[in-house]
Image (tube, rainbow, N blue to C red):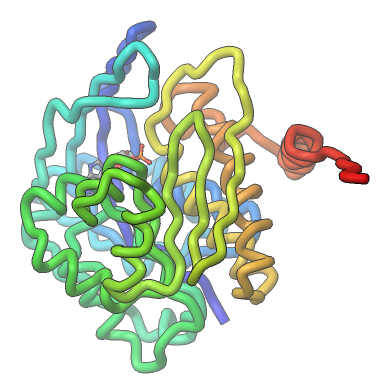
Length: 306
Ligand code: AMP
């Protein structure tokens, strides 16, 4: 029984209306791992170049992340992404995507990862995500996939092949619209659910997240924060909290996914408070419990229709 996480490990350079970072460590699988380890150990699959800091890898190992599936290509450069956020901090432009080591990445699933019951396919080349599913001899109990507009623009057919194989797809609202060709998110969800996944999560940044399954819908708000410092990785952190909770409880019902969405939203609210993974490294189990409690208070109301 284990949680396997696949995704980019990267250098990011981020610009917001309030500040700018140098090259800092990021990547979808980095954020997912820092978050999901609050709930369960992680077996990581990724690739980095010789420039990736050894201390970062050691810190992840100390945190409970198995790095046997992370290839280190000493002669090559790590994946690099740079983005600039708009004033609302909800939308951003990608300034650069340098695939580097990701361009020819062929993942190898270690033998010790074959007990995978929960598979989190973080943002990565869709054919690489699919290769991991295909290398697992036993189909995991749940496969969750995150992706982004970059893959919709550059390799839509590859992307659709991978989407057809997963149980839960996570995208943001503009990606759901792009993928489905529908403006209404309800229509977009119906179209995407016909592509294969049984569950669809649509992330709406500061406006929360929606979970669709058949004709059921659940909505979770995002915590209203006074200050959002850096939204990078919020989606991955959300995914880490979502899958971390499901893997810990081993319950993949719609009801438990509602809880997982709240937990993902609570963890994402920490991520945005500081640049990069800084905040995720600081928080304690107590901080998480308190934040989840704030969510419960935020959405709880009694109503008497008499
Ligand atoms: P999020 O803000 O949750 O959408 O995720 C941001 C993270 O995704 C950054 O740390 C980037 O390194 C990573 N990222 C950006 N573009 C890509 C891509 N095309 N493939 C994989 N990871 C990416």
